[in-house]
Amino acid sequence: MENNMSEDIIIEKLDVSNIDELYDLLQELVNHHNNVSKYFKGEYPSKPLCEKINEIKEKVKNGISNIDTIRLNNEIVAFSIYYIENNIGTLEYLFTSEKNRNMGYGQILMNNIMTYFTEKDVKKIEVMVVYGNDGAKRFYNRYGFQIKSEILSLIR
Image (cartoon, rainbow, N blue to C red; front, side, top):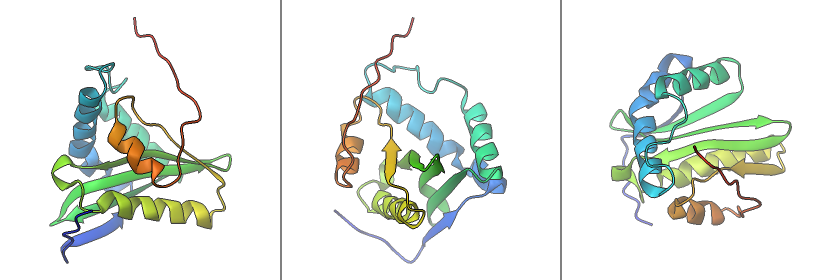
């Protein structure tokens, strides 16, 4: 894995006041999902991005979700959103912008998430991967994640 990290990298948690800074990366994630899965083709996300951001804000405001980011030269280039509910850790998002992949940023975020879940004594961790996103599956497999079930959908 290439690692060109410099002193300009900042790892930080977002709060309600600066969640809007994720908009561009969330839009890139939407585009990525629609491109990697032959079944989406414009169906992702199921609600407008501004609604999703408002949901994220509510979860952060209510102390449910955590958001970690990596900034490179003051630009957010990677982020993760995760939470614990009923002693199950859920990794809702982990995304690195395409131009900043294979630099170790996803690994940094994932290590932070795994440490958090370990400190909270979480025994079960779940992550949903979009069908066709084989790179993400390989990434999570390196951390011990395995497919436990598949959800089939019919969109009419």
